Image 1 (tube, rainbow, N blue to C red):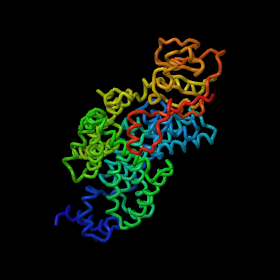
Image 2: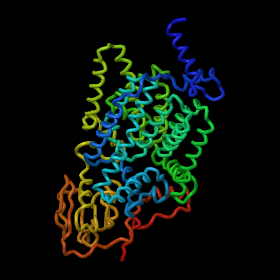
Image 3: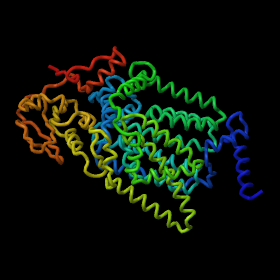
Image 4: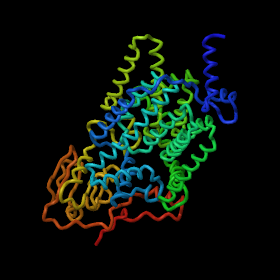
Amino acid sequence: MGKGKRKRNTRLRAAAREPSAHLAAGGARRARWLAPAVWLHPEEPEGPPWKLLPWVLALAFAARAAVALAGDFVLHPDEIMQYLEPAHRLVFGSGITYWEFFYGARSWLVPGLVAGILVLFDSLGLGEPFWYVGGVKLAFCAVSLLVPAGMYFFARRHFGETAARISLLAGAFWYELAGFAHKPLTEFVATALLLALLALCVRPSVDRARVVWATAALAVLGAAVRLQYAPLALLLLGAVFLQARKKAMLGLAAGAFFLAVGIFDGASWDGGLFHSYVTNIEFNLLLGEFRAGESPGYQYLWWLALASTGIGVSCVAAAFFSPRRYGLLLALIVLTLLAHSLQAHKEYRFVFAVIPLWLLIGSDLVARASARMDRTGWGLGLASAVFAAASAAGILNALPHQDRVYRAYSNETGVVRFLHGQDPVFAAYRHLAQAPGVQGVLQTDRPYHSLPGYYYLHREVPFYDAFTGQGIVRNMSRAPAFASHVVSMDSSRSVPGYRLEQAFGEVRVWRRDEEAPAVRRWENYAPVVTGDPIDRIMKEINPGHPPAPGNWGIRLSE
């Protein structure tokens, strides 16, 4: 028997004696048959984790914080509409109510997390946008560190220490992972949870009670935060289930968390179990008819290629030549793309989970290629230089055709600028949050969904957008009775009865004359944004749904 074969048999016998190698009652023979199908290429780590791991994660947080605090930009209006604005309304009382939160079609998991952070800041006397906007961003940056950490611990056992260190650095400093880390979008939060779950899948033992419960929690929460990621969560949960001897405990834990999510969601909306999930699924099934043919099935591959200058797609393509080594990662990538390609409406952010997966594959490809090429490390240095150049160009918005990726096919989304050239409307509303004498705000030319909202304004004052204030805009002589400040993108506009207070790029903030009468107040500060075809679809789902309020739910107090 050859030396290599004896070593391989020794490893298999050792794995068979490990509790984690058993797949319950099947015995060692069945475990050896199933283990390659589940783990594909397990490696025993040598020595303790890399001593520089905490320092790399600290630098990763610093990079994320730098982007987060450099300015304000929106990847998609949902960031404010569905997560930040509802949280502000829950904690402070003022906030625009979009149709999802009028009809109960969204989970409160992520907005609830944001609300918890706002409550903490408010309890410390820091309940102002100057403090909590950055605080919420930094909290999500901290959550995002699960991505590079999960990449490292997975690669360490699956590929080896060299690939693990490369993947840690890739996960820490790839521009998309660093640039979007502070966003409260469900795709990003769920990806962090699933990368932590991926790392748990290759632990030496999965039968410790805390590992079992952590696995169940990560799988259920990952799927609950982003329902379209449920196939990924189920695949990883199934991988742990096949290894575990305590299958009953794992099933019980997963069932308990699943039921808890359903109860929380039902209680949030005063409805049945999983109320928002059921409502959202029913709505999108009917809405699909309106979006047929919106984008082609290959759209995500094209976006992935543009966002990575072809590196990501090349890594995935190369992985197909080593299916046993990369099969688990490929399965996760294919599941993600299929789950989202089948729907007509596509946005690049939906498949965010693919990014750390192709980075994992690429890290191992680089580690293997460098080991084969020479021992001097020049191959690894060249790959590092290419990675650094692409990532730096990405964060500076200098990659070819990069703007086509984040704009997607929606007029709701502007071009994303990570470090410069951000939308100046955020600076305008940060100013209004602190300016004296703000009694009401009229935005003449933009709808609520493309504005910073009460989350940035943070005042219980009337707040009109281009639609709710269209009657005022048509006759600006009426404006002083409704708004103390007017915000406009038209730098040539002059507003009778107002003087220019501040300019932020092309955005102008006008303040009315001091002798003007008091602004007409609202009964509450939560205007409702809905309308056709949303109301018709919701009536078809449930004729008992309340009708959309007239005049966006705005009622003057007198």
